Image 1 (cartoon, rainbow, N blue to C red):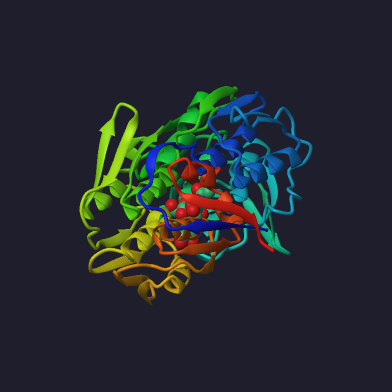
Image 2: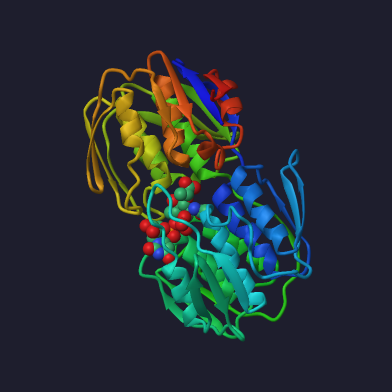
Length: 420
Ligand code: EPZ
Protein backbone atom coordinates (compact mmCIF):
# COMPACT_ATOMS: atom_id res chain seq x y z
CA UNK A 1 0.00 0.00 0.00
CA UNK A 2 1.27 3.46 -0.74
CA UNK A 3 0.79 6.86 0.86
CA UNK A 4 1.34 10.49 -0.07
CA UNK A 5 3.52 12.66 2.18
CA UNK A 6 2.66 16.31 1.59
CA UNK A 7 4.18 19.43 3.12
CA UNK A 8 2.89 22.99 3.15
CA UNK A 9 3.12 24.54 -0.34
CA UNK A 10 2.89 28.25 -0.99
CA UNK A 11 1.03 29.00 -4.22
CA UNK A 12 0.95 26.41 -6.97
CA UNK A 13 2.43 27.97 -10.11
CA UNK A 14 2.73 26.79 -13.71
CA UNK A 15 0.84 24.84 -16.36
CA UNK A 16 -0.94 21.49 -16.03
CA UNK A 17 -2.43 19.39 -18.84
CA UNK A 18 -5.75 17.81 -17.92
CA UNK A 19 -6.22 14.13 -18.85
CA UNK A 20 -9.16 12.49 -20.61
CA UNK A 21 -12.28 12.01 -18.48
CA UNK A 22 -12.65 8.76 -16.49
CA UNK A 23 -16.44 9.12 -16.42
CA UNK A 24 -16.59 9.57 -20.19
CA UNK A 25 -14.13 6.78 -21.00
CA UNK A 26 -15.75 4.05 -18.86
CA UNK A 27 -19.19 3.99 -20.58
CA UNK A 28 -17.55 4.40 -24.01
CA UNK A 29 -15.26 1.41 -23.40
CA UNK A 30 -18.33 -0.63 -22.39
CA UNK A 31 -20.18 0.56 -25.53
CA UNK A 32 -17.46 -1.01 -27.73
CA UNK A 33 -19.17 -4.35 -26.94
CA UNK A 34 -22.10 -3.26 -29.11
CA UNK A 35 -20.23 -3.61 -32.41
CA UNK A 36 -18.22 -6.41 -34.06
CA UNK A 37 -15.94 -3.83 -35.69
CA UNK A 38 -12.74 -2.50 -34.04
CA UNK A 39 -12.98 0.78 -32.09
CA UNK A 40 -10.04 3.09 -31.27
CA UNK A 41 -10.52 5.19 -28.13
CA UNK A 42 -8.00 8.03 -27.64
CA UNK A 43 -7.05 10.32 -24.72
CA UNK A 44 -7.72 7.66 -22.08
CA UNK A 45 -5.26 7.78 -19.13
CA UNK A 46 -4.31 4.38 -17.63
CA UNK A 47 -6.32 4.87 -14.42
CA UNK A 48 -7.05 1.79 -12.31
CA UNK A 49 -10.76 2.00 -13.18
CA UNK A 50 -9.85 1.96 -16.90
CA UNK A 51 -7.61 -1.09 -16.37
CA UNK A 52 -10.43 -2.83 -14.46
CA UNK A 53 -12.91 -2.13 -17.28
CA UNK A 54 -10.50 -3.46 -19.93
CA UNK A 55 -9.90 -6.62 -17.86
CA UNK A 56 -13.66 -7.12 -17.77
CA UNK A 57 -14.03 -6.67 -21.55
CA UNK A 58 -11.20 -9.17 -22.13
CA UNK A 59 -13.08 -11.59 -19.85
CA UNK A 60 -15.99 -11.57 -22.32
CA UNK A 61 -13.59 -12.39 -25.15
CA UNK A 62 -13.00 -8.93 -26.63
CA UNK A 63 -9.54 -8.25 -28.04
CA UNK A 64 -7.96 -5.30 -26.22
CA UNK A 65 -4.71 -3.45 -27.01
CA UNK A 66 -3.68 -0.47 -24.87
CA UNK A 67 -0.79 1.84 -25.76
CA UNK A 68 -0.48 3.48 -22.33
CA UNK A 69 2.15 5.95 -23.52
CA UNK A 70 -0.13 7.22 -26.26
CA UNK A 71 -3.20 6.71 -24.03
CA UNK A 72 -4.85 4.96 -26.96
CA UNK A 73 -6.94 1.78 -26.77
CA UNK A 74 -8.16 -0.60 -29.49
CA UNK A 75 -11.16 -2.77 -28.56
CA UNK A 76 -12.42 -5.42 -30.99
CA UNK A 77 -15.48 -7.33 -29.73
CA UNK A 78 -15.66 -9.45 -32.88
CA UNK A 79 -17.44 -12.30 -31.19
CA UNK A 80 -17.62 -12.81 -27.46
CA UNK A 81 -16.85 -16.15 -25.80
CA UNK A 82 -19.13 -15.59 -22.81
CA UNK A 83 -21.83 -13.17 -21.62
CA UNK A 84 -21.05 -13.79 -17.97
CA UNK A 85 -18.52 -11.71 -16.09
CA UNK A 86 -16.36 -13.61 -13.67
CA UNK A 87 -14.01 -10.69 -13.12
CA UNK A 88 -13.56 -10.61 -9.35
CA UNK A 89 -13.29 -6.82 -9.22
CA UNK A 90 -16.52 -6.30 -11.17
CA UNK A 91 -18.59 -5.94 -8.02
CA UNK A 92 -16.14 -3.35 -6.70
CA UNK A 93 -16.29 -0.93 -9.59
CA UNK A 94 -19.68 0.70 -10.09
CA UNK A 95 -19.07 1.32 -13.77
CA UNK A 96 -18.74 -2.44 -14.41
CA UNK A 97 -22.55 -2.57 -14.60
CA UNK A 98 -22.40 -0.41 -17.72
CA UNK A 99 -21.66 -3.51 -19.82
CA UNK A 100 -25.26 -4.69 -19.15
CA UNK A 101 -26.87 -2.39 -21.74
CA UNK A 102 -24.51 -3.31 -24.60
CA UNK A 103 -24.68 -7.06 -23.87
CA UNK A 104 -28.48 -7.34 -23.71
CA UNK A 105 -28.83 -5.06 -26.73
CA UNK A 106 -26.51 -7.14 -28.94
CA UNK A 107 -26.93 -10.64 -27.46
CA UNK A 108 -30.14 -10.52 -25.36
CA UNK A 109 -28.30 -11.75 -22.30
CA UNK A 110 -25.91 -10.71 -19.52
CA UNK A 111 -24.91 -12.27 -16.21
CA UNK A 112 -23.09 -9.79 -13.98
CA UNK A 113 -22.22 -9.30 -10.35
CA UNK A 114 -24.32 -6.55 -8.83
CA UNK A 115 -21.98 -3.58 -8.34
CA UNK A 116 -21.44 -3.06 -4.63
CA UNK A 117 -22.31 0.08 -2.78
CA UNK A 118 -19.46 2.21 -1.58
CA UNK A 119 -18.63 4.75 1.09
CA UNK A 120 -20.70 7.49 -0.50
CA UNK A 121 -23.95 5.57 -0.69
CA UNK A 122 -25.83 2.31 -1.36
CA UNK A 123 -25.86 3.15 -5.08
CA UNK A 124 -28.60 0.80 -6.28
CA UNK A 125 -29.21 -0.02 -9.97
CA UNK A 126 -33.02 -0.10 -9.79
CA UNK A 127 -33.38 2.63 -12.42
CA UNK A 128 -31.10 0.74 -14.82
CA UNK A 129 -33.28 -2.37 -14.32
CA UNK A 130 -36.51 -0.33 -14.65
CA UNK A 131 -35.35 0.73 -18.11
CA UNK A 132 -34.35 -2.80 -19.14
CA UNK A 133 -37.70 -4.18 -17.89
CA UNK A 134 -39.63 -1.52 -19.82
CA UNK A 135 -37.78 -2.70 -22.94
CA UNK A 136 -38.79 -6.33 -22.33
CA UNK A 137 -35.82 -7.78 -20.47
CA UNK A 138 -36.32 -10.17 -17.54
CA UNK A 139 -33.97 -10.08 -14.56
CA UNK A 140 -33.25 -12.62 -11.84
CA UNK A 141 -30.95 -11.91 -8.90
CA UNK A 142 -29.35 -14.46 -6.63
CA UNK A 143 -26.08 -14.73 -4.72
CA UNK A 144 -25.21 -11.14 -5.73
CA UNK A 145 -25.40 -11.93 -9.43
CA UNK A 146 -27.99 -10.47 -11.76
CA UNK A 147 -29.08 -12.49 -14.78
CA UNK A 148 -30.66 -10.44 -17.60
CA UNK A 149 -32.38 -12.11 -20.56
CA UNK A 150 -34.55 -11.03 -23.47
CA UNK A 151 -35.47 -12.35 -26.91
CA UNK A 152 -35.08 -8.91 -28.47
CA UNK A 153 -35.31 -5.56 -26.68
CA UNK A 154 -38.15 -3.32 -27.80
CA UNK A 155 -38.15 0.47 -27.71
CA UNK A 156 -40.11 2.00 -24.81
CA UNK A 157 -40.70 5.30 -23.03
CA UNK A 158 -38.88 5.29 -19.70
CA UNK A 159 -39.19 7.91 -16.97
CA UNK A 160 -36.20 8.09 -14.64
CA UNK A 161 -37.28 8.93 -11.07
CA UNK A 162 -33.84 10.54 -10.67
CA UNK A 163 -31.65 11.77 -13.58
CA UNK A 164 -29.15 8.98 -12.94
CA UNK A 165 -25.98 9.23 -15.06
CA UNK A 166 -25.36 5.48 -15.14
CA UNK A 167 -28.98 4.56 -15.79
CA UNK A 168 -29.20 7.07 -18.66
CA UNK A 169 -26.00 5.64 -20.17
CA UNK A 170 -27.02 1.99 -19.73
CA UNK A 171 -30.49 2.51 -21.21
CA UNK A 172 -29.09 4.54 -24.12
CA UNK A 173 -26.73 1.68 -24.97
CA UNK A 174 -29.48 -0.95 -24.56
CA UNK A 175 -31.73 1.02 -26.95
CA UNK A 176 -29.16 1.29 -29.76
CA UNK A 177 -29.96 -2.18 -31.26
CA UNK A 178 -33.51 -2.50 -29.84
CA UNK A 179 -36.53 -2.74 -32.13
CA UNK A 180 -38.18 0.69 -32.46
CA UNK A 181 -37.83 3.95 -30.55
CA UNK A 182 -36.85 4.49 -26.91
CA UNK A 183 -37.47 7.77 -25.11
CA UNK A 184 -35.69 8.44 -21.81
CA UNK A 185 -37.50 11.11 -19.81
CA UNK A 186 -35.84 13.00 -16.94
CA UNK A 187 -32.51 11.81 -18.36
CA UNK A 188 -29.13 12.94 -17.01
CA UNK A 189 -27.52 15.74 -19.09
CA UNK A 190 -23.87 15.55 -18.00
CA UNK A 191 -21.14 16.22 -20.65
CA UNK A 192 -20.14 12.55 -20.34
CA UNK A 193 -23.62 11.57 -21.60
CA UNK A 194 -23.08 13.71 -24.71
CA UNK A 195 -19.64 12.20 -25.29
CA UNK A 196 -21.10 8.68 -25.10
CA UNK A 197 -23.91 9.69 -27.50
CA UNK A 198 -21.35 11.10 -29.94
CA UNK A 199 -19.41 7.83 -29.83
CA UNK A 200 -22.63 5.86 -30.41
CA UNK A 201 -23.60 8.06 -33.38
CA UNK A 202 -20.09 7.56 -34.82
CA UNK A 203 -20.62 3.77 -34.83
CA UNK A 204 -24.04 4.20 -36.47
CA UNK A 205 -26.60 4.70 -33.69
CA UNK A 206 -29.60 7.03 -34.12
CA UNK A 207 -29.68 9.25 -31.00
CA UNK A 208 -31.08 12.76 -30.39
CA UNK A 209 -31.58 14.94 -27.34
CA UNK A 210 -28.45 13.91 -25.43
CA UNK A 211 -27.51 16.77 -23.09
CA UNK A 212 -31.19 17.53 -22.45
CA UNK A 213 -33.66 15.80 -20.10
CA UNK A 214 -35.23 13.82 -22.97
CA UNK A 215 -33.09 11.45 -25.05
CA UNK A 216 -34.54 9.62 -28.08
CA UNK A 217 -32.89 6.53 -29.52
CA UNK A 218 -34.17 4.68 -32.59
CA UNK A 219 -32.83 1.13 -32.89
CA UNK A 220 -30.66 0.26 -35.89
CA UNK A 221 -29.72 -3.08 -37.42
CA UNK A 222 -25.96 -2.93 -37.44
CA UNK A 223 -23.03 -0.88 -36.23
CA UNK A 224 -19.49 -0.10 -37.41
CA UNK A 225 -16.20 0.80 -35.76
CA UNK A 226 -14.77 4.30 -35.17
CA UNK A 227 -11.96 6.33 -33.66
CA UNK A 228 -13.07 8.56 -30.79
CA UNK A 229 -11.17 10.86 -28.43
CA UNK A 230 -12.80 11.29 -25.02
CA UNK A 231 -13.50 14.74 -23.56
CA UNK A 232 -11.19 16.28 -20.94
CA UNK A 233 -11.89 15.46 -17.29
CA UNK A 234 -13.89 18.39 -15.90
CA UNK A 235 -13.53 17.07 -12.34
CA UNK A 236 -9.74 16.75 -12.54
CA UNK A 237 -9.72 20.29 -13.97
CA UNK A 238 -11.94 21.56 -11.13
CA UNK A 239 -9.69 19.86 -8.59
CA UNK A 240 -6.60 21.69 -9.88
CA UNK A 241 -8.56 24.96 -9.98
CA UNK A 242 -9.32 24.52 -6.28
CA UNK A 243 -5.61 23.73 -5.79
CA UNK A 244 -4.75 27.17 -7.13
CA UNK A 245 -7.46 28.74 -4.96
CA UNK A 246 -6.48 27.05 -1.69
CA UNK A 247 -2.74 27.79 -2.07
CA UNK A 248 -3.21 31.35 -3.38
CA UNK A 249 -1.59 30.09 -6.58
CA UNK A 250 -1.58 31.07 -10.23
CA UNK A 251 -1.90 28.22 -12.77
CA UNK A 252 -2.86 27.56 -16.38
CA UNK A 253 -4.93 24.48 -17.26
CA UNK A 254 -4.53 23.01 -20.77
CA UNK A 255 -6.99 20.63 -22.47
CA UNK A 256 -10.12 21.91 -20.69
CA UNK A 257 -13.64 22.75 -21.92
CA UNK A 258 -14.89 25.94 -20.20
CA UNK A 259 -18.52 25.05 -20.99
CA UNK A 260 -18.19 21.88 -18.86
CA UNK A 261 -16.98 23.90 -15.87
CA UNK A 262 -19.55 26.71 -15.63
CA UNK A 263 -20.91 25.86 -12.13
CA UNK A 264 -17.37 25.38 -10.76
CA UNK A 265 -16.15 28.65 -12.35
CA UNK A 266 -19.20 30.52 -11.03
CA UNK A 267 -18.68 29.35 -7.42
CA UNK A 268 -14.92 29.97 -7.50
CA UNK A 269 -15.58 33.50 -8.78
CA UNK A 270 -17.88 34.06 -5.77
CA UNK A 271 -14.99 33.34 -3.40
CA UNK A 272 -12.46 35.67 -5.03
CA UNK A 273 -10.86 33.33 -7.53
CA UNK A 274 -10.30 34.73 -11.02
CA UNK A 275 -10.72 32.42 -14.01
CA UNK A 276 -9.85 33.73 -17.49
CA UNK A 277 -10.17 31.91 -20.79
CA UNK A 278 -6.87 32.20 -22.71
CA UNK A 279 -5.74 30.55 -25.98
CA UNK A 280 -3.95 27.79 -24.01
CA UNK A 281 -7.02 27.01 -21.86
CA UNK A 282 -7.95 28.51 -18.48
CA UNK A 283 -5.85 30.85 -16.31
CA UNK A 284 -6.79 30.49 -12.62
CA UNK A 285 -5.53 32.63 -9.75
CA UNK A 286 -6.77 33.95 -6.42
CA UNK A 287 -7.41 37.63 -5.92
CA UNK A 288 -7.93 38.60 -2.29
CA UNK A 289 -9.19 36.62 0.70
CA UNK A 290 -11.24 33.45 0.28
CA UNK A 291 -14.93 34.28 0.78
CA UNK A 292 -17.41 31.74 2.29
CA UNK A 293 -19.98 30.05 0.02
CA UNK A 294 -23.48 28.54 -0.01
CA UNK A 295 -23.21 25.41 -2.17
CA UNK A 296 -25.80 22.82 -3.24
CA UNK A 297 -24.87 19.81 -5.39
CA UNK A 298 -27.31 19.03 -8.22
CA UNK A 299 -27.39 16.98 -11.42
CA UNK A 300 -25.81 18.80 -14.40
CA UNK A 301 -25.99 21.73 -15.15
CA UNK A 302 -26.06 22.23 -11.37
CA UNK A 303 -22.96 22.13 -9.17
CA UNK A 304 -21.31 18.68 -9.53
CA UNK A 305 -21.34 16.36 -6.51
CA UNK A 306 -17.87 15.17 -7.59
CA UNK A 307 -16.50 18.63 -6.70
CA UNK A 308 -18.20 18.86 -3.28
CA UNK A 309 -15.35 17.43 -1.19
CA UNK A 310 -12.76 19.65 -2.86
CA UNK A 311 -14.87 22.75 -2.16
CA UNK A 312 -15.33 21.68 1.46
CA UNK A 313 -11.54 21.72 1.82
CA UNK A 314 -11.45 25.20 0.33
CA UNK A 315 -14.22 26.50 2.60
CA UNK A 316 -12.40 25.37 5.76
CA UNK A 317 -10.05 28.32 5.17
CA UNK A 318 -12.61 30.92 3.97
CA UNK A 319 -13.29 34.03 6.07
CA UNK A 320 -16.69 33.16 7.53
CA UNK A 321 -19.43 30.53 7.59
CA UNK A 322 -20.15 28.32 4.56
CA UNK A 323 -22.95 25.81 3.97
CA UNK A 324 -22.82 22.79 1.67
CA UNK A 325 -25.90 20.72 0.84
CA UNK A 326 -25.30 17.33 -0.81
CA UNK A 327 -28.48 16.32 -2.68
CA UNK A 328 -27.12 13.55 -4.95
CA UNK A 329 -25.59 10.95 -2.60
CA UNK A 330 -26.81 10.04 0.87
CA UNK A 331 -23.42 9.76 2.57
CA UNK A 332 -20.86 11.94 0.87
CA UNK A 333 -19.41 13.89 3.81
CA UNK A 334 -16.99 11.22 5.07
CA UNK A 335 -14.05 13.49 4.25
CA UNK A 336 -15.29 15.94 6.94
CA UNK A 337 -13.95 13.68 9.71
CA UNK A 338 -10.51 13.56 8.11
CA UNK A 339 -10.52 17.35 7.60
CA UNK A 340 -11.45 17.84 11.26
CA UNK A 341 -8.27 15.92 12.19
CA UNK A 342 -6.43 18.71 10.36
CA UNK A 343 -8.20 21.38 12.43
CA UNK A 344 -11.21 22.13 10.24
CA UNK A 345 -14.41 23.30 11.96
CA UNK A 346 -17.24 21.40 10.27
CA UNK A 347 -20.66 20.40 11.58
CA UNK A 348 -22.69 17.79 9.68
CA UNK A 349 -26.46 17.55 9.92
CA UNK A 350 -27.71 14.83 7.51
CA UNK A 351 -27.41 16.37 4.02
CA UNK A 352 -26.01 19.70 5.25
CA UNK A 353 -22.49 20.66 6.30
CA UNK A 354 -21.76 23.97 8.05
CA UNK A 355 -18.13 25.02 7.76
CA UNK A 356 -16.64 27.77 9.97
CA UNK A 357 -13.45 29.11 8.38
CA UNK A 358 -10.32 28.71 10.53
CA UNK A 359 -7.01 30.59 10.43
CA UNK A 360 -5.01 27.53 9.47
CA UNK A 361 -5.05 23.77 9.09
CA UNK A 362 -2.26 21.62 10.51
CA UNK A 363 -0.73 18.55 8.89
CA UNK A 364 -1.75 15.15 10.31
CA UNK A 365 -2.13 11.45 9.42
CA UNK A 366 -5.32 10.98 7.41
CA UNK A 367 -6.67 8.44 4.93
CA UNK A 368 -8.53 8.61 1.65
CA UNK A 369 -12.01 7.04 1.94
CA UNK A 370 -13.08 7.55 -1.66
CA UNK A 371 -11.75 9.13 -4.83
CA UNK A 372 -12.88 12.74 -4.37
CA UNK A 373 -12.43 12.70 -0.57
CA UNK A 374 -8.81 11.72 -1.20
CA UNK A 375 -8.38 14.60 -3.63
CA UNK A 376 -9.85 16.99 -1.05
CA UNK A 377 -7.29 15.82 1.52
CA UNK A 378 -4.45 16.50 -0.92
CA UNK A 379 -5.72 20.06 -1.37
CA UNK A 380 -5.97 20.66 2.38
CA UNK A 381 -2.53 19.13 2.95
CA UNK A 382 -0.96 21.60 0.49
CA UNK A 383 -2.43 24.52 2.47
CA UNK A 384 -1.86 23.06 5.95
CA UNK A 385 1.06 23.96 8.19
CA UNK A 386 3.57 21.13 8.47
CA UNK A 387 3.42 17.61 7.07
CA UNK A 388 0.42 15.42 6.19
CA UNK A 389 0.39 11.70 5.42
CA UNK A 390 -2.52 10.43 3.30
CA UNK A 391 -3.01 6.66 3.41
CA UNK A 392 -5.03 4.37 1.08
CA UNK A 393 -4.18 6.47 -1.96
CA UNK A 394 -5.39 3.68 -4.28
CA UNK A 395 -8.77 5.39 -4.00
CA UNK A 396 -7.24 8.54 -5.50
CA UNK A 397 -5.43 6.69 -8.29
CA UNK A 398 -8.80 5.39 -9.57
CA UNK A 399 -9.53 8.82 -11.05
CA UNK A 400 -6.40 10.98 -11.01
CA UNK A 401 -3.56 9.94 -13.30
CA UNK A 402 -0.08 10.81 -11.92
CA UNK A 403 -1.58 13.48 -9.65
CA UNK A 404 1.63 13.65 -7.57
CA UNK A 405 3.77 14.26 -10.68
CA UNK A 406 1.36 16.90 -11.98
CA UNK A 407 1.32 18.67 -8.60
CA UNK A 408 5.13 18.50 -8.23
CA UNK A 409 5.43 20.16 -11.65
CA UNK A 410 3.37 23.02 -10.16
CA UNK A 411 5.74 23.33 -7.19
CA UNK A 412 3.90 21.11 -4.68
CA UNK A 413 5.92 19.36 -1.99
CA UNK A 414 4.40 15.87 -2.41
CA UNK A 415 6.09 12.46 -2.25
CA UNK A 416 4.80 8.93 -2.82
CA UNK A 417 6.04 6.44 -0.20
CA UNK A 418 5.44 2.83 0.80
CA UNK A 419 3.02 2.55 3.73
CA UNK A 420 5.10 0.59 6.30
C1 EPZ B 1 -21.76 8.65 -11.97
O1 EPZ B 1 -22.08 7.64 -11.02
C2 EPZ B 1 -20.28 8.95 -11.76
N1 EPZ B 1 -19.49 7.74 -12.01
C3 EPZ B 1 -20.04 9.44 -10.34
O2 EPZ B 1 -18.67 9.79 -10.22
C4 EPZ B 1 -20.89 10.70 -10.11
O3 EPZ B 1 -20.73 11.13 -8.78
C5 EPZ B 1 -22.36 10.38 -10.39
O4 EPZ B 1 -22.51 9.85 -11.73
C6 EPZ B 1 -23.25 11.62 -10.27
O5 EPZ B 1 -22.81 12.60 -11.15
C7 EPZ B 1 -19.26 7.36 -13.29
O6 EPZ B 1 -19.69 8.01 -14.24
C8 EPZ B 1 -18.44 6.13 -13.48
P1 EPZ B 1 -25.99 8.21 -10.55
P2 EPZ B 1 -23.52 6.91 -11.07
O7 EPZ B 1 -26.59 6.98 -11.10
O8 EPZ B 1 -23.93 6.74 -12.48
C9 EPZ B 1 -29.13 7.11 -7.24
C10 EPZ B 1 -16.55 9.87 -9.25
O9 EPZ B 1 -16.16 10.39 -8.21
N2 EPZ B 1 -29.48 5.99 -8.12
O10 EPZ B 1 -26.21 9.52 -11.27
O11 EPZ B 1 -23.44 5.71 -10.22
C11 EPZ B 1 -27.75 6.90 -6.61
O12 EPZ B 1 -27.86 6.10 -5.47
C12 EPZ B 1 -17.85 9.10 -9.26
O13 EPZ B 1 -15.97 9.95 -10.37
C13 EPZ B 1 -30.58 5.20 -7.79
O14 EPZ B 1 -31.25 5.42 -6.79
O15 EPZ B 1 -24.42 8.02 -10.37
C14 EPZ B 1 -27.32 8.30 -6.29
O16 EPZ B 1 -27.87 8.69 -5.06
C15 EPZ B 1 -18.47 9.01 -7.88
N3 EPZ B 1 -30.91 4.15 -8.60
C16 EPZ B 1 -27.94 9.12 -7.42
O17 EPZ B 1 -28.95 8.32 -8.01
C17 EPZ B 1 -30.19 3.86 -9.73
O18 EPZ B 1 -30.55 2.90 -10.46
C18 EPZ B 1 -26.94 9.51 -8.50
O19 EPZ B 1 -26.42 8.33 -9.01
C19 EPZ B 1 -29.08 4.67 -10.04
C20 EPZ B 1 -28.74 5.72 -9.24
